[in-house]
Image (cartoon, rainbow over all chains, first blue to last red; front, top):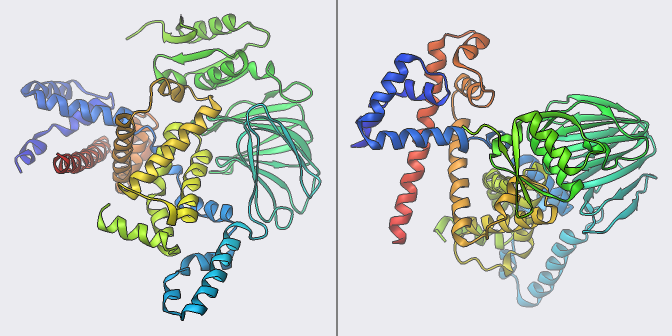
Length: 339
Length: 189
């Protein structure tokens, strides 16, 4: 109750304008006057500022979280079809306690076995293929497709693969797909935020934590942003990245003939710095960090093919007004003009 | 464990699918957000959350939960997310965070931060439609107030009112959260 008068007396318009960086002269005077009244006011203002600038950053990600899609994925992984979904709602063990002992024991055994069978051995449950560090694997699928998994890669086939669909989920990592074209049942690789639909082809997909890169060797694919249906057609010999944090495509660029290699990955077209650094680390094996995390969103176009690590860093720094400091084997990128 | 949670957990252990599904859907976004802090990849975050819920469903009878169900799931999500990220070693932000040990205090702080964020995001979700639009254009598209007014064909004063209202709601959500946190701390000590 004591805080209510203070709450109402807060210059909300001026605070809102200030936090947005959109303050008029009159509002600034009003705000400064209020801030100078008591240190508590300044604390409250700084807390609101912090919330606005830092705590709300993941709201877009939060909006992407779809509990219904998550639940559907859960059911798919459990291999639960429509009947199973109904069973999931009604399974209870308590009714067994009311049965006579010899019947309940037998029924319990059957029910438990049934549940066990249903949960673990139902035909057509989703199939997962994955590779460990330093492991590669080639998988042949019933429709004649083949998937070559690079290390630390995980793919999942729906339980109805080659019956009602040819959909593969690339959960993480890099895989090369060879796909015979089937008009009536197109091959699709689903990566959550984006999909790739085959139009008769072979192609590589690298799924990283902040981007997805598709390179087409033969044929043509449709690279689709799932939330809006925005589509890019990629012909043979071309490559395209989708930046997941920014929810957008980059620019289509030429790939090398043959499959994607490290040198081709050093061509960046309007790419966020965070993605560039991840790629450099992967290729050169060096540790790079940003002193200020907001630098990760800066965009850069640079073709660093054939450059040494040091030259690549120099190009990046001069392009973006940064400087590089090496400390105990870690390369720290900072703004060249702090503040 | 509070009585409501204890009842929910008991139902899950008894393989009550309806209760399990309801709990999953009510809390999915919270745990998804937690996993996303470490993984930055929505599909991976979804996989991690589902890994945990599959284990809860399959092994519920064998799992002993001392504190709270939510806390148990939170810690499981954090541990799996960290493991998945250590395996990949491709995200800059998480590499920075992995340089310090994940002590109990750090885990608790991450959980508290996540709880606060969920409250704030729910407050945004409950804003009136135009208010939410104006708020999003300001905060997430970086538009100035006049730009928003011009784009939406509304007055500058209306834009200011919407932003102010949104900020007040966020402040209220923060206040409620800090109040609950204070009560919790008071009970513990």
